[in-house]
Image 1: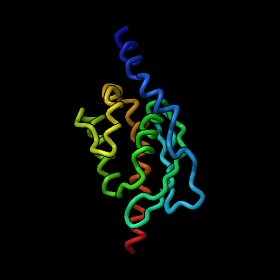
Image 2: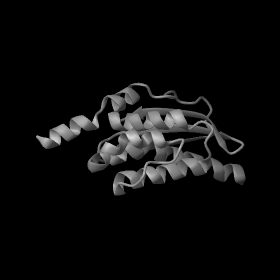
Image 3: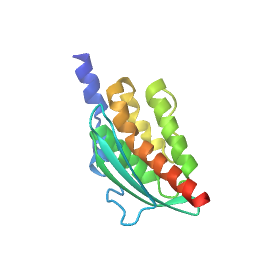
Length: 150
């Protein structure tokens, strides 16, 4: 029964609020880069569109088909990503991975809202879904940074 209680706590009201209100939930008409990621474990998918101007994210769109935890992560990322640099996005991805897999600190601002997902540390089968949006965004901004510096 303790496992059921932990799972109920995991799906807090705040996580469900975030999952229900994902910023930038529409795809971009003319993205600079598009990356789709899928979690083989649960089947969650996220497609991210990004445009960079002067080294910062100027436009962001996402199509999220994931559990409430993956949706909550996409919501936090969507709310924080405009105006960030590729380095900030990559750092947030790495910090989120450490938070989930090693019970490390919360990702740095402006992605510190991901703290709401700290209860998921104990649920390893949910980690991939939570990481999808930042993994896709990291790949997209890396592609753009490489093409824009070439």
